[in-house]
Length: 261
Image (cartoon, rainbow, N blue to C red):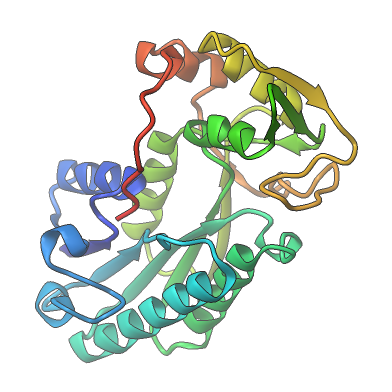
């Protein structure tokens, strides 16, 4: 079976491509790096020819309100249009647990717009909503740092490893279309400030993490349960301490722009 992973050279996409290939499927990593651009349409007809499944794990290069909405709407419309022409039978999209509770942010308003376009399409679909990734905990702390202090709410969060996200998306992509949404998350709940404190300590980061009732998550006010999935979520296996035990996840990182596609 031919499966096209749009955003197939990014954090999740590259892991997903590997897993699909391990299952013996013809897998195309489609991204601007490989000559396929879901926003301009460049290379899409060729990439989608003969595809049975398309998995969209793209992310916008900008979180500015207008730019992120334009990215997700344009990219999703293009994908759905070209998929219809190619006879694709299953559209899978990666989204975010709690999106409808985070609409203070333009990014999450754009994700809702993306989901709605998929639901209104004639193409059978599955939407996989994942919780936050362990890999982005430092970025959350960075966003909430003032001087040498990280101020975060003590809201609950149930994060997961990027490897597990890819595994969950792979499982859905190889199944029948859900024509609905499934939530996936990690096996453990943490208070957000506690999680950041443990992650920074493991990296020997000297910043102090403070639980602040007025603290925000990426600038968004959240409640105790905004970031955690529902009781019917599919939970993956990798625990935070297991992930943190890997040397690459403990060492102070050299900062560089993260490739999303």
